[in-house]
Image (cartoon, rainbow, N blue to C red; front, side, top):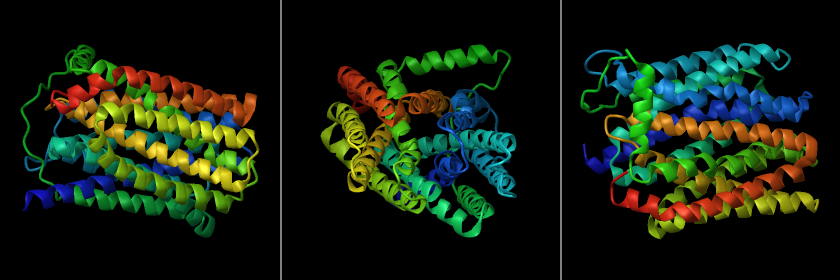
Length: 414
């Protein structure tokens, strides 16, 4: 098969898999909060529900068995087999969540959501480790853009279309549809040929030491330390604004259907387009310019949303500010995911990706919880002022670390 065609098919498959893994999470943690708000859940209740996503923080632990143990026969690659198994298990759990309406059974909903988060988190590791292994280095920023676009399409599917499906056909329909998407992705994975890798150690007699050594070796890469600090802070503030955008617009008089269509569908589409364009623009402008520029765009979007809410602007102004947040989120995610793929070592793709994803998820979970507390105590303006001020600090940090990161990536040392 032509190499260019093969790479294109791989990009398409991994884009679909990221969409299939993302849409259920978006529905659970971005779509359902809208319904939760209608059923009387407070900002703190909705924020605490995010704790069901805690397994995402422990990706570095879940990566260890993926890296060290082979499943299936000799014709099946390590990452490939893990990805198929975990995608199918995730599909099964979604069917369990969808068997009956659970909004009044908060403990059961939380427990199943926790299991779904565990499997989504675990499946994400071999899927993206396989992508790093199969795609050439020059394709990684493009892969980051496609992954970011898939997340944004997940926002359309999980945060918009599935809400409409739920309103039309009831609680069960969205979960069955999303489970079907995972099964289709698993079938596609079965057609992939994973190349052999250098053997890695399989002894787990001292797992803590091995994990510490892996983390030290990861940090030993050129520019890994400043990149890791930036990774913790680059996305969660703009992401928290996006998370609370639907309840915020609902509180400002928007109808549920309008929120689902304008933000869930429109905002997701805008973010997807911005993600794909950002990959090209970042390569053209260079990382030393793109890293602070994307951070600055996130700050500008948060400031615009803060101003619109503070001034009690009309619906048109709020929608424009929301779409600017979507653009900024797409650009920031493209940069973050592309660089995460660069900062991995050969034959340690799962461990290094899992380490970075854990740090990314830790901040992504902590910031919305803090933002929810601020929303209840200080109102939307207070919450958005905090997010804007924090993002301004990220701009400063990105200006200080941009050259080291750019040199490490473009010289092929990361």
